[in-house]
Each structure stands twice: as structure tokens, then as C-alpha cells.
Image 1 (spheres, one colour):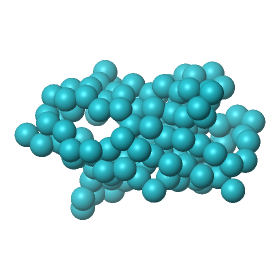
Image 2: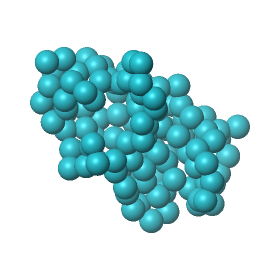
Image 3: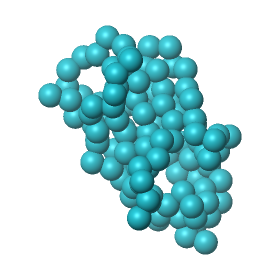
Image 4: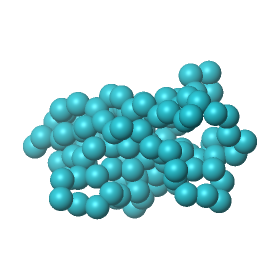
Length: 118
């Protein structure tokens, strides 16, 4: 069984930085992506970005490009979301998820709350 656990969310002020963590455990994957998503109150879930575990290539949504960076730590089996220059509109529950190459995101964490105050 695959488990994803996010951590690091908290209340911060606009302009601050915050780093979220996502630890993946359970079955091994040959080739997969770890994606970050977020959902603000009353809004649909939004794609933030993803990293290819094997190649470490990353992609980002336009709304976060240049401010957010995704990285990974093989030893810790973890993926990180470094968020800089946070804005109030970044307030949301942030989720990480795993998708095998070519597939959908089937495995999700429980989410971690990020609140950015003005």
C-alpha cells in the first residue's frame, strides 16, 4: 500500500517563504511523478507542479512559476515544495500525489494547510 504524508503547512505572512514536505512509502515504482496540488476554499483542486522521480525534471503551473521550486531527496524518499514570495492567494490545502508514468494520480496524501495572511 502506498502512503504519502505531507507536512510543513502553517500560517505565514505575505512575502514569506515556506517549505512543504511529502514522504512516500509503500510499494516501489519503476517510473513515476510526484505532483503537488492545492485546493482553496470554494475552489477546485489546482495543479501546482510535479517532478519526475527518475529524471528530476520539473514543471510548474504559471501561477507559481518563478516562486515555487520542487525538489527531492532520494535517501528520505521525499519530495519538497519550496514556496517563496507567498501571496494571500496561495492560501490552500496542499496535497502531494503519485502517478506512474503515463497514468493518473492514483495515490494522494491527506494534505497540509497553508495560510498566507496579508
